[in-house]
Image (cartoon, rainbow, N blue to C red; front, side, top):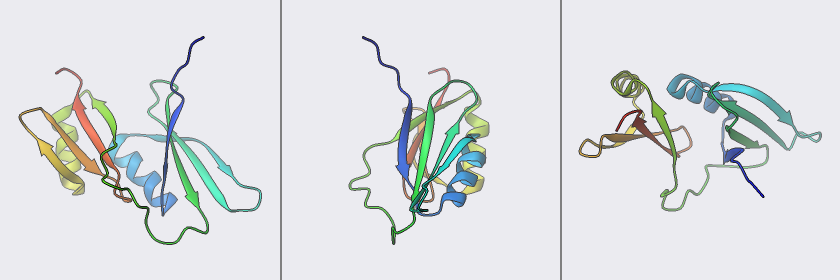
Length: 123
């Protein structure tokens, strides 16, 4: 029996704002969108164009306010082939929330407060 990773889900307060953020910050593009028949939720799957693994963004119509992210210790990591250019982009976007120069990595924060780790391809 074998398993493979399919997707990671996060819930978002403003779906279109999040789609734009993930496109600009990380180059992710919408692969498909699912709308509940009753309109209670919309799901958008994003992909980096390099594999099958996806990020699933879920918007819940009746959800009011932000999400409780607890201690926000969980995160999703992204590897970039141009760490310096990525760092410049994220600095310009104002989304870098933590940097560890000694470890050669940093985190950006999405519009809902989720932290995303940015790593260079070669460490």
